[in-house]
Amino acid sequence: MHETGSRNPDALLSRELGVRQLASNVFNYTVGSGIFALPAIAVAYLGSAAPFAYVACAVVMALVVLCFAEAGSRVASTGGPYAYVETALGPMIGFVAGCMVFSTGLSAAAGVSSLIARSILALFPGAPAALANVLIVLLVAGLVTLNLRGIKNGARVLEGITVAKLLPLLAFVCLGVWFIQPANLVITEVPNLATVLSTAGIVIFAFSGIEGAMIPSGEVKDSARTVPRAVILALGAATLLYLAVQFVALGIMGLDLAHDRTTPLATAAGTIFGPVGRTVIIVGAVVSMFGYLSANVLSEPRGLFALSRDGFLPKVFTQVHPRFHTPNVAIVVYGFLVGAIALSGTFEQLAVFANLAALTVYFLCAISVLVLRKRNVRTEGEPFLLPGGPLIPIAACVAIAGLFYQTVQRDQFVAWLVVLVLVFGLYGIRAWRLRALRK
Figure 1 (tube, rainbow, N blue to C red):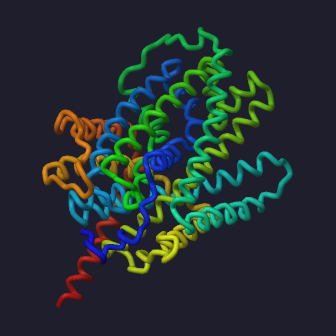
Figure 2: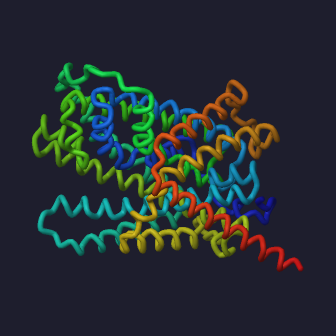
């Protein structure tokens, strides 16, 4: 559990995030590169019934987000889901949640850094491939420097990126709707529930990211009010955007949309607007990925800070810059790890279990809501209460378990089990060392 009072490192952090800033962070974490590719995958599995997958995802994520809203309004500590689970279920299960969130965020950041660099080079044919490594270093170093100088700076950049990433997607929807062929939207065959859920298990990770976006909880103003409003606003906006994009892309391309699983939106835009439209969407994808990476570098180092605060990592990670009030050591170390993994190319192996790790965190947070409510945990003001008593957290657990079962692959499940064994092993070693020190 956390220390309280003046010795609590969270007290040294600056509370700068309001509803708009936190919603921007959640939105940028959620709307990354996935929306530019997943429409083709949804059509490949479900045909013209592809929007069903998004509806299923929206229902599941609505349950998850509501659980995060109540948990976040009760626990105003840096760490996000790690802090919620640790407070409710104890340090061991909290450590599991923290490691899952951090590993997922780290591998995703490394992968997105590499994708941004390769996408930029794709816009300049003939550029040497080695330049990608230089771009990765400059990109990560720039974001680390920005976030070192205060969380308000990082939040301002995210607000600007939110607008920049929305413009090409909104233009695609608003202009593309006039080129829809109604016949492409006719559902010729209604898929069974198992097919919809298995497809939703893939598409849902275009909706995920809240687990990382909520890590800076200790820097949110009036969390009891801000967290519920921000997460519900961000998910609502992302859901409407995703449905609109899928609807327009399917209306333009029909089932042919499934043939391009790399840049389907760019292909759809190119069909109606030519090479300029395709280029605009590719640039939009780069901006969107940069928005995700910016949110990631703002949020994930706070996970190192929280784990250090609670004794799982060396205390140096709780160091806070005296002027900018940011966890400077955690930010620098995290940036180094992201850059090193991106340059090494090993992030794909780390990402094998990312889907199951995210579902694990969501499941633990849903259970945590029930415990936090029973104990009446509250750190700031009157907490946000979910309607229906325990119904929403229980429904979230059932929905998450169903998706887990429908989407799990043998290699992913084995990787997930290996990670769990390692995490419990590390926790056991720490507990043994603490007992030895007390003797």
